Length: 269
Length: 234
Image 1 (cartoon, each protein chain N blue to C red):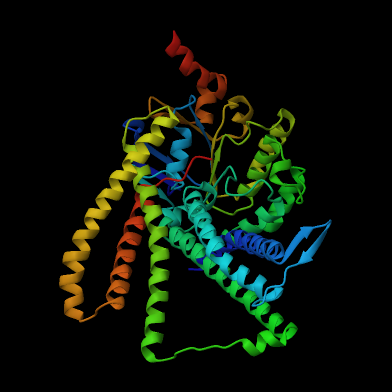
Image 2: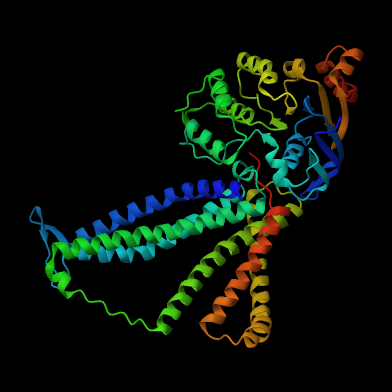
């Protein structure tokens, strides 16, 4: 477990660099967008465009917050690519730990880096909010929070958050599954010297695997989970989706651990 | 004496091609063994299988009686191309990684080796020549205290003078009971430090002999090795 923790820490440190880079980019992009929204250049100098509803700082905050929906997915894609690069890397795979545990540490560190990104964004947005309140009393007075804290709303919120987490993990697992299984199948096929041919065969294998997964999912979801599990447990709606996603995640994680332990090799040097 | 490395009935196929066929090999503790063979003979593949990097083979590989990949990895040090690090990574950052990941990593030993290899801790991978990178890889490999060192063509980019110095010093860097398995093309240069040689030919272990035995019957290890291929050509 000790090696696992150290490995996780190192992987997270590596991935956190992307997080810092993206947060800085997001900050600069939102500043640039706010600047061009609130200022225009004519007669040889910049002029402030007054907006009735929003001052510069709150406007910058709104732009920063909205850019999370652009930079978040970018970070997700970067971590997906990084995961698969590290899964194949000999330097990392030589760590004295089973390949399955290495895989779990790798995926977990990517997921934590995503959470870290969200936390940093929330923290910066809160800073913006306080700055806006302190610099503009009108903004503070107009600010109103209306949160309906009934138990159903809280339950739904937790359910949606869980579903989001499980979906994010599912996407990581799915990409790994397609990578591991297509590479394992390629290793069993005759050697081809052409990279283009190998890529073509790999794409074909991936399409076939996706088709197979969709077919398996329809059988699994419709017959096994709906009939056997959900009816017997009495769960419905969001809970059933969360439960189904959890089970699918566990299954695909198990398959990936098996593939990396027995078939998916580290690249040579 | 109990074997350190035991390979039993190992066969490895990839892309419908047999790379290694029915390999059986035992290495005892405290030996320096050369793994020889032509390009593409399967030397690197054998090392990758021992280190758990290559998968889906038939047969068993055990180090000190342990078959489990994680336990095997903990007992061996394999020269790695350092591809897991960005080119901007400094030597001191790589050392930090090794210190954290490998509990057997000896910082003092690395410092001695780094000075011996004339490497600057502040140097980045992008600033290093192929030879310097190989020196770093050797220094990192021997800074771990393990039972088995796997050196895969470790000297190919290092200049002749430095190579000679490193080869003469290797015996001082390894713990007494540790075994080194080294693959190299410069047979004549490593011959002086060797206890045994293993030759891979026709996908299997062609011969496994002690250098003492070879020297009793032949001129040198290099002559013996070259003789195998000369006889085939004739």
